[in-house]
Image (cartoon, rainbow, N blue to C red; front, side, top):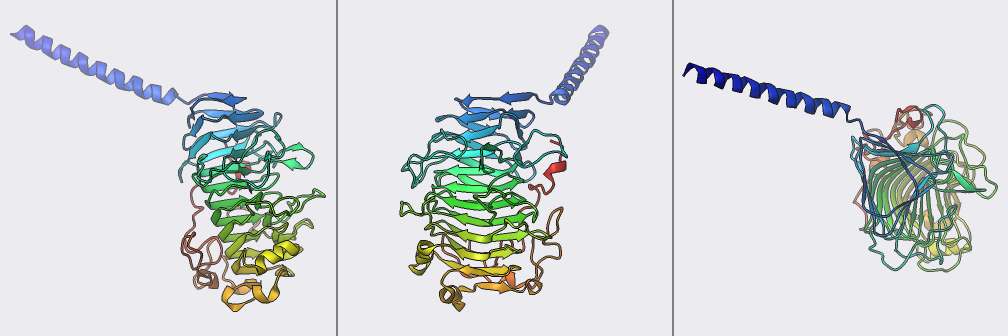
Length: 439
């Protein structure tokens, strides 16, 4: 009896030691599992997941082929190689599921060390779909190979949510760079929300046809245009913030820097579908300092475009001015009610209304203000700070909080002008100093 009791106690103690030992080993495994470094080249042809514990380096053109889905975990960092002009291209029929979170955004960035990163360190992110485009064949500038577009306006290319794209826009040919986020023929089954493009060597966001909608977009200190629409884009975009460095502008002889740039196509033809996207609740701000001579207009709308803009704020010294409806065809689209401009507040530029039907654009019901007094707008005290996070929210009592028009039914109902009311939707996931971030 005594022997059995001792044996029982011995076995019990031994079991406890074994369990404790297993627990320590599991904890040690967790500590040493720091992930691995992967270099990604060529084509992705089957469903693939990139894990947040790993680091990924893109080299050259990396394609996600039709039928394959690339899933990227929240918090994953993907870098682009400079020497090979790395670019990630999601082809028609493929998908990207890059759904970060507010506290764990997904980051596409430069492979250069902090402190020496620069615009044009790599290519950018390109998503191609099967929705309508008014150009055939449609290929991406620079790559000049992959075609896109079709007849499926409900096409689904995946999800981009809580994503940052930094230091892209490398030149593949003279004056032909890839945008931070290029969207070619992307359909409305795709989700685009909470995306920041920073320090890009071309446009921040450019839509070539398609009808995908988007919300909560940030363009931060990019070179060329912030929001560029072409080739029949017809989606709806709400809540967009552009912040410009006055010393950084496109020096190409064939281009200039604008908040918005929009064409139906390069020749201003009647090609269908016509570019007729709608934007609401956008803010365009030039930071403190004298703007470069290549800054043109906050809205350069030309070549038979018919986009509409509502409840939008532009503050800064664009040299040409504010709203520029350039060319007879574009101006006629407004006169014929193919496009609309309401709730615009433009301040800080020599000429608020550059060209267009002055009588119609200044109708009281439109609530457009083309020469607003900055001092009375109620902007944050540091709304144009040269460095760090700018002041985003209007002050209590600001006229911007209640000065908007009633928006079309496609949009969230808001009363404010600009990207922000009383909520800072950039909080937690954006980065206002990616140059000095350890990745």
